[in-house]
Length: 568
Image (cartoon, rainbow, N blue to C red; front, side):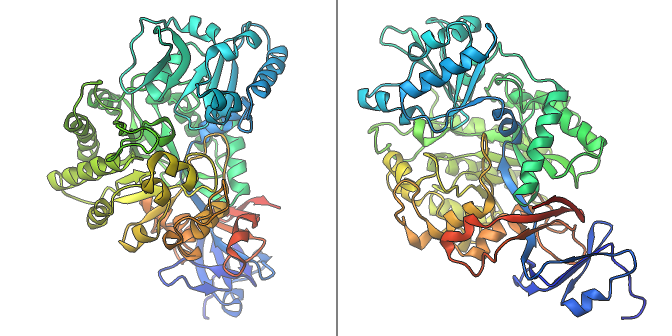
């Protein structure tokens, strides 16, 4: 080749999964100034080696585009490392013992914060068919306001001291879209169900500083890099999170990201889904206020830090019966859940109209909209609202997407495909929200098909993969394994194998499809000329090993913009 251009870095002797349109495999890559300048066989790429070129011999290992987590809560994940992790607690005695030990280590008057608790897994409560309450923990946390954040990130339990600080009592009405647990006599029992209630419970908690948030975010980015990620979408960040617990995903977190970008310290690219609410309660008026007051022009280098997405919640989660369903819950006949909009007397039409107004406002202003819609009724309302916005205000596609919506009806996905609406899904291998058998106990047949993506992909829907990580990062290989094998984490049984996807489709979810969700597929998501040099190298070939072993593969190197940010 005449007038050869020397590369800054050349990676040779590998198995390069390009994830291009043909899912082709090559052997080597040439990189200059953080961008890919050539992809091909070793002999061709070696021509780009000059006196100053860094040469990396991949020794036959698999190299892929770096992963993008299309929905994760990094602010809260990093904050959870400062909490008492009770994810594995299965008895009240064990919970009380951990709280007693934590209280002994914590100065009197300071908050004790727990994360990851699943009250449904507490043996004593299950045997007595009752909820965990504040009275179960009061005597071991007497000197400390205490908040137990539940595994789903939507609800919590607080002790009596925290309740006293909140100023709430039996006369306090349920917040719009939330629920306060009560005894038969109306006394508050410490349970705060769904986000508006969670905000009420934690209103007096001290907030993190920007400096503390920067430390948290950098530590979390290092973790992401170690699992092959070069980018991710912050699932909900902005003024709507200011009054939740320590504000780990509020306005200060956005300020922390901006400072880290200005200082050149980011090691992963970030897309922020802007969340607007007033103490957890969404409304069109609040969204308009926040869109008018927030300066979106501050994001000057959108390849590294972007904020063009508006996050909305339509419903909750099945395990607390707050997902909005078309049919009765299997374990609660006569009840189908509801949306987070409108008071107790709001009709389904009024609830759908409130969602549509917010989507219409964001769409009209040019934003992408991401809607948390778990129940099939919520998915239908969301897709219908997207279609209304697209038809009423036509123009360039905003790439609107449904979050967590794999329980939706097939016809709604047919409509979504027609209008270019995406699905952002998290085929996690475990947990009560993701285990197919456990969800079936709540949602029947809809629970069985949750996270089953084969038919949805075949309809032409672009499915982006995420983890929804709140207190733990599930590596993307384990999530691909879950989607490919369809094995229940609780029993090991294969549930609805016809809904399993291929390994290639699983890889697409966390690379090119995730880039499509961000509107970045022309610059990242595959290993092609003219795209950023964001790569990951695995210790084994996930296309050649047994599907049950995919999740055990390890990342041995991650590159972002041509720089090594992790190496094992």
